[in-house]
Length: 573
Image 1 (cartoon, rainbow, N blue to C red):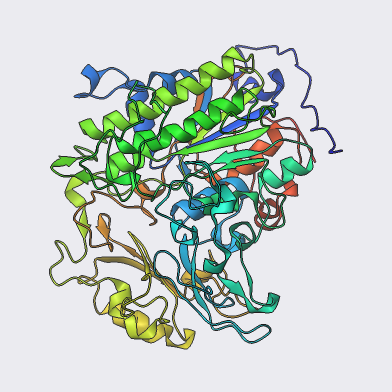
Image 2 (image 1 turned 60 degrees about the vertical axis):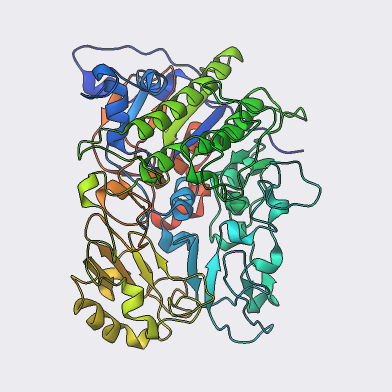
């Protein structure tokens, strides 16, 4: 039998003194007993997006708020306007920072496609062209590109990832093809599953070990990584593949009443749900429905009675698509640097808001409002907000070349843009460069510095400027996952070369990293916190809220990650 989750704390009687507001500001948590945490990532949702939609902005909705449900949560919430994601701000490290309390240097996660000098390639080529590689048990590793996205699915064209015997949308961990995973020669060339690629444990493992029930819904089966290193599997994981072919979803209806039984936008590119402003809402509705089932105490498909999870959550992709997509002649993104959304982006924000309203209503219907902490944040932002700044190299930069292209001869073949069959280098609006030989770092940097304008380069991090925030790159005892060089471009420059996008993420810019972060519960006195915080502080805060020791997280112990400020959790360990 699992031990029952520790009971939080008794409701305290608060004496509010108008003469001493500074002494009463931090007692929110003493008035509630948290039994459940609903963690939501609205991927791409900037802090300014929440400000604009909850207060209104000229030119949109007649200046009135256009996310009433998020705004309502804000009236019983603590809003952190200086929240920053992981750096790099890719979805994979962004998510893992939120649930581990760690940064990439400790959790070892830099990007969904990255590189590890201590691992070998997969036994077969992934769906995105990574590998195959060779691996000899016990031999020295060759180093290889690592991939944890749709390419490791058995069949990435299917919503269920190709899991044998799975329902139309339900593959989960069973969708992962172990032959497409990186291999560890030190472990007899065993495949490295997503959760064990992460070097540290997560809140899901800590809560599960304490007897809690855990659930998560996300965009790839690979994001079962949230279980964390050495942690037990989640009780309920749901990962319909976002980059699968778009199909009709019988029985699925969006919150606005659109039936998904047939594809709403059949004339769009149907090779991925992210290619359409309408179709992405059907995809996200799958995960919204999973949360509604879980609130009611069922599994994600509503086919088996379980219990309302202690920790559960979901990510929305609709806002990210609304920020980035150009669909035919229709543009998403923003109208200006103030973050005024286009009509397409507005629709996606309204969709996410209405869906969250559904969740809140269901929580209230179940009588769980006071015992549920709702946390809304984002794995990453998106850059640039200002539509005039977007520059997809080579794009406006004539004869432009990405950093990886400039030094292609110095990169491992699995990372090189010169590889005709490979997955390519790790470049979005950041460039992570792992060299074939770290001794060539100085010459590689010299080549980059000679082409600053050609590549739209803003900053180059290497040597001490890199090692201060990341471990020293190299084979053990150094860190086999740390890039030799990180290049951040000028704001607006991306290295995708895509003219079909308006923004990208992954980099270090303010638009990439400054995201919404709201903690909401009826016991809270609403207020805004202006000090800088990190989304990695969400993990220890969740454990503290549930009465668990945050130091059970490896990331907290190794990095000294604190709980979020200005909310007194009233525990000492």
